[in-house]
Amino acid sequence: MFQTFDDTANPALGAERAKRLRDELLQRGLDGFLIPRADEHQGEYVPPHAERLRWLTGFSGSAGLAIVLLEKAAIFVDGRYTLQVRTQTDIDTFEPKHSSEEPPARWIEEVLPKGAKLAYDPWLHTVDAVERYRKAAEKAGGTLVPVDSNPLDAVWNDQPAPPMAMVTPHPLDFAGEAAIDKIKRVATNLMSDDADAAVLTMPDSIAWLFNIRGSDVPHTPLPLAFALLHEDGHAELFIDERKLGPDTHAHLGNIVTVRPRDEFGTALDDLGGAQKTVLIDPTTCAAWIGARLATAGAEVKRNADPCELPKACKNKFEIDGTRAAHLRDGRALTRFLAWLAKAAPSGGVDEITAAKKLEAFRAETGKLKDLSFDTISGAGPNGAVVHYRVTETTNQPLKPGELYLVDSGAQYLDGTTDVTRTVAIGEPSTEQRRHFTCVLKGHIGIATARFPDGTSGAQLDAFARMPLWKSGLDYDHGTGHGVGSYLSVHEGPQRISKMSHVALKPGMIVSNEPGFYKAGAYGIRIENLLVVTEADMIEGGERPMLGFETLTLAPIDLNCVETGLLTSEEKDWLNAYHARVRKALSDGMDAKTLAWLKEATRAI
Image 1 (cartoon, rainbow, N blue to C red):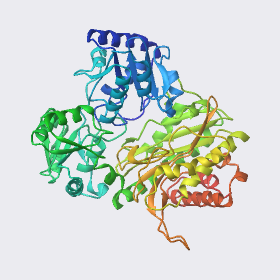
Image 2 (image 1 turned 180 degrees about the vertical axis):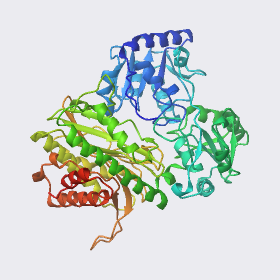
Image 3 (image 1 turned 135 degrees about the vertical axis):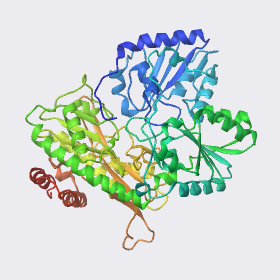
Image 4 (image 1 turned 180 degrees about the horizontal axis):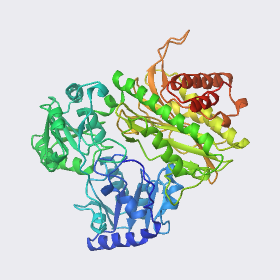
């Protein structure tokens, strides 16, 4: 599923669809309904039939929530989408709210009428989220009530069918560890947690644990399924068996019992009937599952998904694979940047043309399985929309004097990439160069960080922001997210952000992507992927330190750098990085691109 540029967002439909939903709520005796951007698995990417928020409101972002009451409605988005939501949504029907500054629970407390019944689909909200919303509804004098069937589905007449993509084995050469060994390792951890079983609801955890991949959702090779892992090492996979061919059945062999998906509820009942202690992750597990277990008599234990941390700490095979993927991807991206440098200043290049050209260079590697997300191809003011998605309607030409931001990535069998470059079309302004250099200084601050074991992303986040803060600037998103191994481009639990308190560990892959966004003018972001490593001992130091190895290989636009703002150490880092890029990418490069690469990575 590669990128398309259709524009399905139609704000004009919002009012009519909200009315249809309200009519359905009235028929059911309900006073409101919560519509999250989520499916039963709580992943970032959802199949078309689960795009309920987009169908209702027009908003296409990867995170959000609408609350529709009988007399008013609001849509809540985070800082990445505050500009986008206003262009895609009828704001007279759905009042936009910043989810951090005015959280949904607070809005419910203040707006929900006394005695009102606020409904939710228990498959589409986590255990933790439902508890927050229930408390808020009760504070308002109302009640939060689950529904057996989703009222929005009842009025979505052309809702697509659920996906039925085939599941394939993920080769051991890339996984680096057999599924049976992973199962034993995670089951041992379950025993130490005093749990009899764990419910696995996140498709990337299931894909990692069983060494399988699928294509049920866009851009992420995931099979949608549920699983139970028992402390004795027995595992059960609940999936539509039509997705499993002979090779996959043989791969799963005797280590996994495959059961129909509609037996999942019965299996939860059996755990409860045996009074088992069952682990769920309340931040990702659907409320329906937690309620079913509790009603059946299970002791529900709350803890992190037991696959999340071991999945995040990549093994040697996975790290070698991602290095190879980034080398391949870096060559494709560099060919694109060289083409762009020649083609864009003379005109004729627009956002869609550029995105298609970059995808074509990746496809020419012969290894591309998919993009890892829709390319963010933003010219001028569109670059200031953090997660901008170009469509035929919004498509803009790349103009001299503007900045062009391209955030893109690829899925290869050996690794997942994600990289952002901001380039000047023609000559950048003094202000653009200053802002770009502030972002670059923050990027270097993360890349060169040394930190002791136990350090979290929250403790490093300010390293990236300090140069911007000194100039009275900031950005309204995290500095970095985890990345999977031919899995999700956004992977937990590790992040570099103000809110992340998970310790960074060797083998974790994170992005390093500070930015600055001037609304209506331009956006700047510089993103490389990093892997956490054990750093060399610091001379005179007493404690071992961790650090980062930069995986991404592509030039940073020197035309945008105000060298006078860089320290000598920062210049040394940039020169060393560019020397490494030049050396790594030169082999097999055509003469014209090689000449451009040498100039683009010149020492400053």
